[in-house]
Length: 186
Image (cartoon, rainbow, N blue to C red):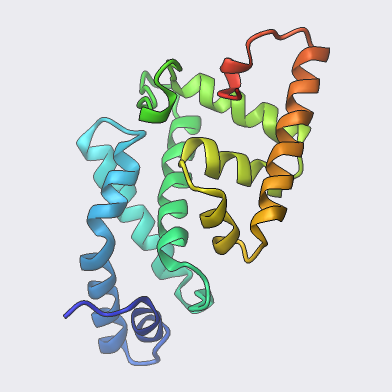
């Protein structure tokens, strides 16, 4: 029987090493395939995917005492995996291509494009605005999902999103960059 996230987190925070090990094994069995798929969206080499999968679970294990069971744990795991994969791409000067997302059919992406997009967003926006844009455009989360994961109202998320998009468009216009598609912004 698959345990719920609260029970797994409780086991991970235990003082008993056997219970911690049991919780970690249950965590791995429950989420390893999902985390593998998240990483595979960015990374092609199986060995690198497996390394990043291990790194993801190691990071979760190292931070287990800080885990909160009132947050969306699945989102926390996938965000950790995605961030590790993106950092892997940023820190390596390699030929990896970030795989195309099906909802960006016309956008041909590679690691430099994504890095450039994120750098531009970070230079022009507040961190919460960057997070909302990335969650919505790259990970295809709905505004409702983003609101739930961040304990915000849906209207607040939409307002932050559309204001952030407007700021970026104004900046692009000021910089005389005509292609908003470059930033996957329509």
